[in-house]
Image 1 (tube, rainbow, N blue to C red):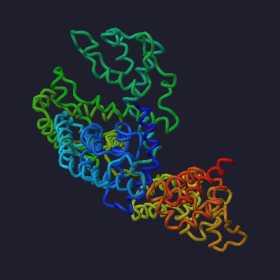
Image 2: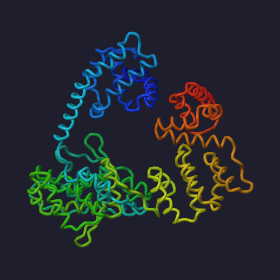
Image 3: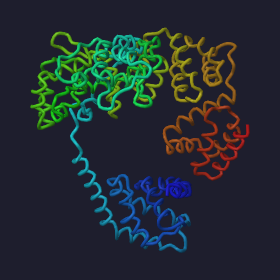
Image 4: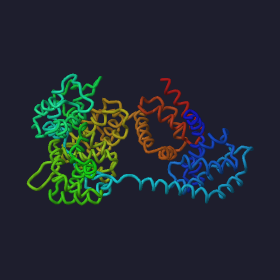
Length: 569
């Protein structure tokens, strides 16, 4: 079935692309994207001929097939029938509705007949989906989704440099304990099925990581949850790796922790970040334990929302109330745990994420970095950026590409204030030359450096040596009337055009088509005769795209010829 779908989709694609272009001018109120699934399933289930449509098939498609395959019933209820109406009109007006089809008038009458029933079916799907959401389990105390709106409204969070974060991660006591435990495990230790280690081995492991032997009358292995959390952390950090035949082994470079390279240190620390869950209280009753699940994450998100610090008593009271609201056993679990925050805070301190100052609990810079990553993992947006003083030119350019213009200008201005103009120009152009395929970074860098005037001349001269930056350097040096500087060539101009087309294509197909239409088919045709020769990273991709989407068939044909020439170079 998958192969049939792929074949049908391939057959439909050119027709749907032409319909989208037609709809912009002839049916602007319809949503062409909703036609795709209907046209695809019509082709698969009712007619191999894309232009043959019957009233009975249309009814069956909309009332039987679409409720089974539609992804967004809400959008379909509002827009699918108008979109299908527009599509059938397009087929009729362009001569694609075959003689074997029912007339357009009959097909439109059928759409009117099924409208109420179709909308009812979509609303049932919407109700079912909402019911399923209601039946889902309520999130735990660390459910970031509950705070999504508040997180989105936070002021910009400034993250510390990697060197500073790596230095802090090297000092995390829990990672050192995980290393020591892994080194003690050795190269191939056999583990048991009921308990990983015997009581004698547990006592050795406790000594290896500096933990006391618990006072217990039962098996020691059942009285050391903290040790098993460290064991799990060692696995998360990839210090320990399961082997064959019920064995585990230390990884080769584990004993070298803390690593010399900052990137390696932070990579390892991030691997163990989800160990924050190990800080949740563990009680004798599993139901009570589950009632406090997510407590450690709950601490972290509340600290972030409060700007990084909270009074411990107030935080404890807030979490106790949240536990009671979330689970009918929440109050009992909180009382049974004695001091539920103690294990959570202990683990977070051990992982370098929080510190306690009297009655105040505070996120460390490493903790802020970590909770921002956890929020991002939960697919929740938060405005977090590197600190201006530690931001590289490439980080600045990449970040600014995603910001509104006024915010990007403010970032550039703050960054530039920390550098001499000539040095700023040098760093920005070096960053722009790192990736020959990144046109947006080049354009941004050239735009900013272009505002620096004569101070940027040395950097522009150096940029002449790089093919991807030469067009910008020659253009700006010419504008500055620098003696001896090369004049921009026609190839330079064509390179700049290809960069702009690349950026436009990245904004979406409609924006790309609009940018082509702005310069007119004659100009595009003239460019296609020569632009294929430019050794630009995206020239073939752009020519292929023009051949697919340009509404002028002659231009599309010229693009295909140019693409053939480019591929022949």
